[in-house]
Amino acid sequence: MEFSLTLVLDIAAVAVMLYCLWSVISQKKNIPGGKIGTKWNILTGLVIFFSLGYLAMPFFSEISPEVLRLIISAVFFFGAVYVLITINLLKSIIKVLVQ
Amino acid sequence: MELTTVLKKTVKGIEELKTRKYNLSQALRMVLILIDGKSDVAALKKKAISLAELEDYLKDLVTGGYIQDQNEFTHDAPAPSTVGKTGNESPTTMAKWQIVDMVRDVVGAEFGERATKRFMEIDDTRKALSKALDQCFEYIELTIDSKKAKTVKLKGVDILKKL
Image (tube, rainbow over all chains, first blue to last red; front, side, top):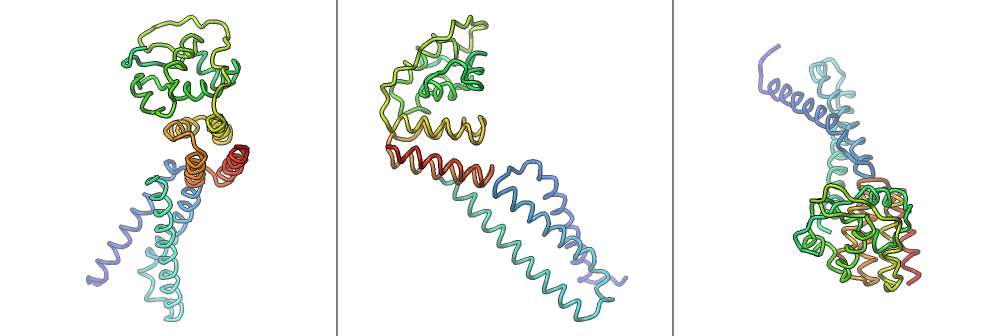
């Protein structure tokens, strides 16, 4: 495997995402029910999806360009969903906290 | 009662909160809920700023054997008493206590205690009660359960409608 900046970034991305996966799963026991619980489960699902996607990066060169574009689009889309859920959750928490 | 006295619930007090066995009035129940074994009377007064009769209620609870001085090692609980059944509270105050009791019933004692403390801090006005109820709804929806939150809201609105 050739050493390159891309490889370093890929490895770093996988490491960070695996840490996120560990973090969402280990925090699950501290998460209450209600909206927070529901949204945390969705976020956990998305982190699992991203982790699998990141782990599949070494095999991207063997995937056809059409499928690769679809995967990238899916990652972008679900990434946006992730950010949206996080922002909405933070808004709800901030609203309750300031009361 | 000295301001530095720290009060704690007796076995009878804990039993009353769990079972309502002694049929304590809502006002006294609310005060009993506030007793945490850590706050002194001065701190309780700050928490229950809208409750002018707090000291009387505390004395009633001590007399009834529901609470005791933290420094007392034993307490012989007297027979079930009729303390606290004064019935001279305003309709808004009664509504406040009904809401607190209802919240405890719907979401359990742990959050009920927090809700009680919150309700004790507010004025006895319909507007303040309505606002506190909304806040309660949002907190329960966010951290406990959406259905329970809706139940609290609906029952709370029903109580407020009667005012």
